[in-house]
Length: 135
Image: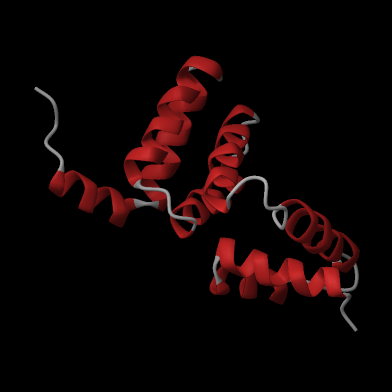
């Protein structure tokens, strides 16, 4: 039977990452990886994301910046979508990615823009339709 921490973490995890993503991840859980999956849900999601000092929106900004700095493209892709779920606008994500060029280096920033272009293609298309490219 899942612990209360696990249940709380799962609710937060689903809210941040989306039902479909979490369902796909849980479907891959087996006897071998179950301990780390349970730990992640209880520790990361219930105990860290469950804190109220930072909003989920602000937590997303921090996570994006850290994942860019650590060069974690797979996790960045997941958390770019989460940032949208948490209320970030495309232009705010764009600013985080741009700032990463200064603090993480141009290759990290360029890679983050490339991943965002793939993951958030529909959102970026809508953004481009309403924003004129500077001359």
